[in-house]
Length: 220
Image 1 (tube, rainbow, N blue to C red):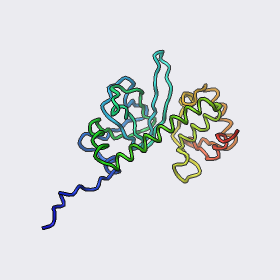
Image 2 (cartoon, one colour):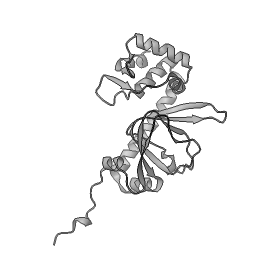
Image 3 (tube, helix red, strand yellow):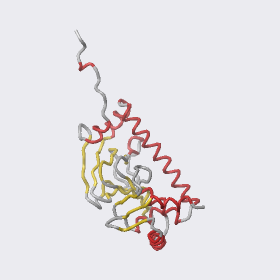
Image 4 (cartoon, rainbow, N blue to C red):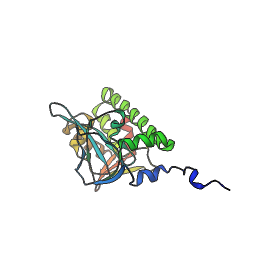
């Protein structure tokens, strides 16, 4: 008699898991400008960005706010909870209409331990995030504000993620760009106009970023 099919564990489908609700996870929609969680809130879950874009900001004890990351579909955030972080260390805000999968802490720990494909995906995300943090620090320490702005725009356009030579991204304010780059809005405005005149960017119902902007980053 053949063994029952129920004795064999079915293959784990990472994309299906991250695309559907289930026990200890739910899909939540947010409108543009809506806060997903605030700095200092309890940290009970990890979130996976399915659609839209999310801005992460931190606020100092003196009330000064800084943008530390812009997230896009395929990114995890709020993962500090599985490392023992009881409170959110940043505020997450939807930059546009956004859909996220919210995975409860214990469920996240379970699936990391039991499902190797999911674990590989999550570890890959964390390693890339760590590399990005190191690159951001080097960028702040050694590059001019013009180069930092060019690199930020390329990251927003997800340069290198697809074969398209140009990317059109959601409208982002110069104030937000200034916070991310670590400079003033007037400097951002100056460089954005310069990039536009050189043909590196265009305004056409959104911000169109040409891969030629990379020349600014690579310039000595």
